[in-house]
Image 1 (cartoon, helix red, strand yellow):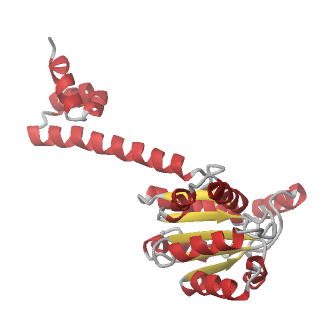
Image 2 (tube, rainbow, N blue to C red):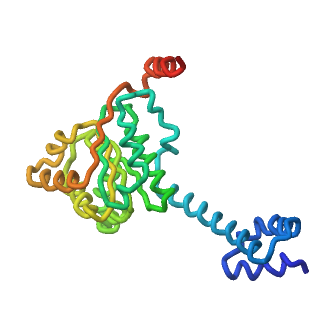
Image 3 (cartoon, rainbow, N blue to C red):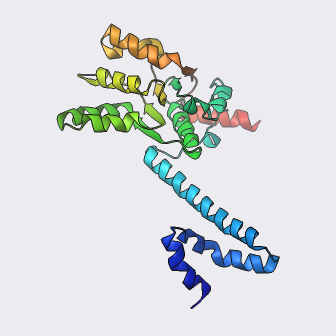
Length: 253
């Protein structure tokens, strides 16, 4: 029986079976490079930690439920020069997540709000944070259904527990029935406990009527704006092919 065959059950018992993926390579390196035992041990354990980190990152990204694989590297800042690039790059450090702050991305349809929101979420995943991305209408629909089947508290926890919650396209339609209360409850429970990114094509001043109650709107706004970064994104829509061609021509000159 070979050494690897002896090691396999032991490594599996210790939940270190990933080491087997690179063990033969590391053994050959140890022989060729005359590595001492400590260096050899460090290399195989480093392989295992990298494997686990990669696996955990993939799991966090999958659980974040992003619509698309968006990154800041793939965002075309040259397309709309008025997009606050410096502020977005600063937010990409994800200190706002650690400080439980809010980011409000405001602007018309098509300027890249969702892209930036998901890219910041992707950065947060890479830094070890638990993230959840959800469209506003879908989140409120889930809570409405949860009221009906008596699972409201458990469903609400899904939106209040992550380190970073991203609510996309708030205000596309008026809030109905208990939706203003549900939205407020999420804002209230996350206040100073978790970070929040909200994208909307409505200016912050236009959010109050969504709640249909002045006191509720005031309480929500107070919590949202207390620790917040408000970024206004303006310019051409990315979905306009003519505008994209113009931007490409300007960049090429």
